[in-house]
Image (cartoon, rainbow, N blue to C red; front, top):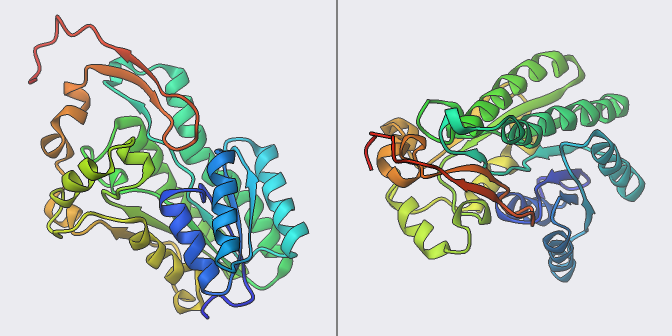
Length: 294
């Protein structure tokens, strides 16, 4: 088992890529703390893991709250005694719609979850790993949206770009402590964050969004996260690994593949909160004076 004796903390671990990764870590011998804003799916994830014989515990966590992040790590230490792996994976779709219609509140919410949440995880996780004196692995979920100007909503893309640079900078700072920091850039992965209840439709759409003929699944991300969490990647730090079925090799062209989702064609503005259990807040735009393509 590649993670035998290790303790891993996975934020956003109650569904999608986080849940698949938490289960893979547990299957490889790790004791896992699942941290998630959604208490209902979090409890269900822990119960499912227990039924499979895995040692997994859950704690409700708002990754944008430093107090919650501190409580998350305290839970890990009290329950398991240490932290060896941190997967900063929690995410939301965040602000959508045209730049000119984006509110400061929606911008702040998106950056709070996607960027500040990663910063807080690294800050407090690194303290524990440094104190333990045995190194560790920190993995951050970025996105192919961070790699171009047309692979995701603007605010989401900006926040994920921040995650990429933060990962590199933290890797340099923490290298002497043998704490590795890397990022994963998923492509179009069919998860509860993306399909909003119509999984079959998003699977069909995503299977056509890159050269690889199948749609992306959470397990594809989990496999890369396992590599980065294990000693197999002991000389890998400051890197970003793209997992996208060849989408960036071809060029995302998101607005052409998903024209109704493009900001310039959007009829809505507001905030989406993914699988957190919190309600989305979308506002219909007045498009009578716009002359962009339908």
